[in-house]
Image (cartoon, rainbow, N blue to C red; front, side):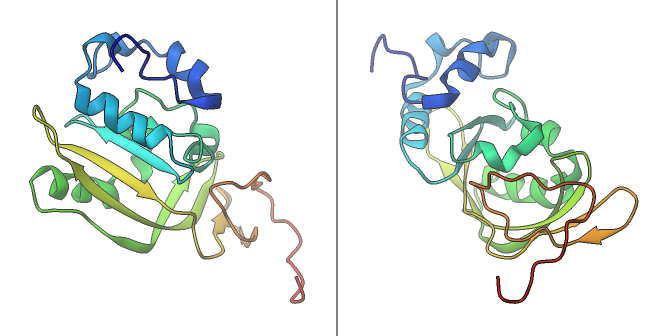
Length: 188
C-alpha cells in the first residue's frame, strides 16, 4: 500500500477523488493519511454495497460507487462534511453521529424516514442504515453502511403536491421529477 494512491480502487469515482483539494479539507493531503483511514477507504471502495465513510469529528465524506446514486444531484460530495451535504436531514442524523463519536456504539435505523432535497425538491425517502465506529489509533471515525431503501419513496414537490414515483434504489437509473408521473398500475 505504501506509495500507492488511496484512490486506486475508486473505479468510476477515481477522477472525482483526484479532483478534490484534500489539503483544504479536515483530512489534509492524502500523503499524510493514517494507515487506518487508507485501509478503511480501501475496504469501502472494494465492496459493491453502498458505503459512506464520514471520517473524523468533521464527518468528511468518502464513499464508493454504489453510494453515489444516493446523493443524486448533491454529487460530487467527496471531501465535504455530511452536515453541509444533508442539512435538511441533520436534525435526524446529527444525534446518531454524536452517539457513535461519544463511544455509545453503533446505531441501527430501519426504514428511517428522511426528507432529502436531492433533486431540487423534498423527497420523502426511507433508508435502512447503521453508523458504526471505525477503530483507529488517532481518532474515532464513523462509517455508514447504507442499504437501498425497501419502501416506495413518496416525493413531495416544493409546490406541496405529492406523488409516488415507484421504488427507489441506490442503483436507480431513472430520475424522480418534481411533477407527478402517472401512477403505476396495480399489476406492475
